[in-house]
Length: 490
Image 1 (tube, rainbow, N blue to C red):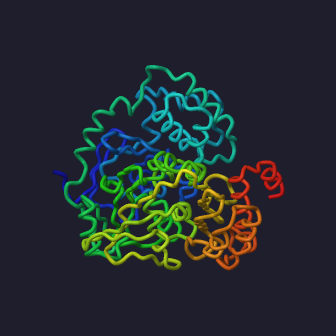
Image 2 (spheres, rainbow, N blue to C red):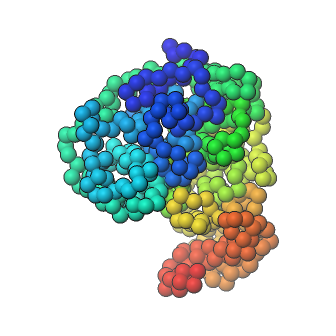
Image 3 (cartoon, rainbow, N blue to C red):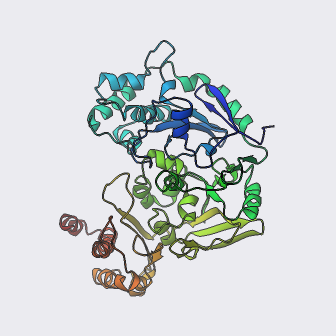
């Protein structure tokens, strides 16, 4: 049975046991300052540039899965029962480069070299996950890696070369030890709750969802951390002191996905990457949004439940989930309660989560076969950027083509993700025509009073929201020629 006064994980080929883990200490700082593994770089310290990319292996549904993550915002306390792989681990003992590294050399994929280890690790993660990735897969794998001097074509060329000529036998540090690592990680899973540190610097790793409820009953103001894609920035940018920090990324009970004819149940600990296929099978229109949430590293770390629980008005998933009629399950030692997702958001920074409660799961009902749905994200950069606004639309028509149900939700237009009740009312009982769409767009001023910030002005947000409703009309009515003209003007 694992000791409960330390966390244990594997670093490259060495087992690590730590009893001194700062509550807000990052994996990157530990790797560089304590272990002197300086191949992993700090660039942005906010999960945006990818220079700090490492692979983290974890047991998921009985399989050992390796994912690229941002070490700069991954907190050290979350590493129990994982396998951390840094760029130093890839080359052979005689210095022979891994094929991914050699391809970058051969195709001149590096100049100053600062970003190169991160690119290597992202491409190595792709190497492990896909035998013959095409260019779209390569570009998605590199969404979270920025290069200022080399340019991306040589890097993509290296990735294509290693994909097309992948040797059948090659020294690979992960494949060589996969079976042994899998067995060891299973033994490192906590059987009892781990407690580290003293008041002001405490780390808690609950052994189960039930234990999580008990911890939060005793510590209702604890900071719960799943992926740390948001909390990590509280630490690196805002320098917040957090105590205690409760890590839940290992709880398999919160990582279940259950599909039934009536809809999809997703555990709060399911990451964007894990949820993608199940959600997109249920609602294909979600794929363009999910594939633009951060980069691959962020999608591998961030969780659906975390995106909801922190209550941000510009979170990517709440608008489409609200438009789809999602319901949320909250849990505590007192039991469970369920509520519509839209009712969870009360005001800026305030959610309907009682002391001791945590988000356990969400249920996304299956849309009707003839429902029309779309979600659009507006941001300054296409990839790796936070929304200026995000609009989600779902429409049901009766046999006569009249709107029988309308759900419109925007993020970035109010203090919370919020439905456009006036715009919805303007559509109800009317034929789905351009005049109806324009009437609904005119009502958006009654629903929202957006603010001006560095992402967008209030006027831009309102204009964009109206245009997105127009776009939804054009796309759902098949008026492609008019849509092309609309896009040219926009």
